[in-house]
Image 1 (spheres, one colour):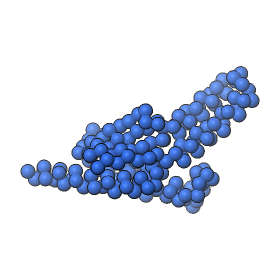
Image 2: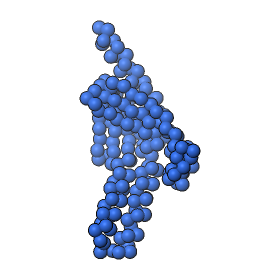
Image 3: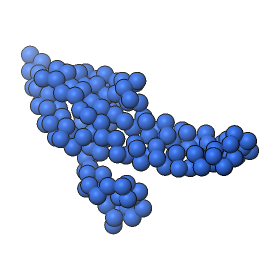
Image 4: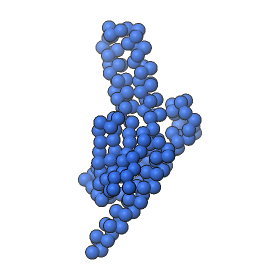
Length: 165
């Protein structure tokens, strides 16, 4: 079965929006006649905007290959599930008592961005892949996680049978 997730762009848009808020007024006010500090400021916030674009992620699960695409699909990483060593699932809680300065709360009232799951898949060769629930569309994440668990169970059965034989 082939599954492809849609990217949830709320967090990247917040990051890119803040970057624009701190650079565009400076450029409008001073034009391009900036001091060294001004260029450093623009450069730093441009890197933040690039990080926001990097956080636009989607995932594909084809047979036993997991593909993660970043930066609007420009960069991709493929991992074969047969080389998986272990995976961990953590529940992350960043709601008000634990993180009162959470900026995303200003833009959305969805609980998904405050309490979410993070999967960490570790493969042979010290390669790791991290999947955050908040970067994937809500409907797609539950389907993707369910299918990933099925695939991992199949891979483990095959490894177990290969070890016995």
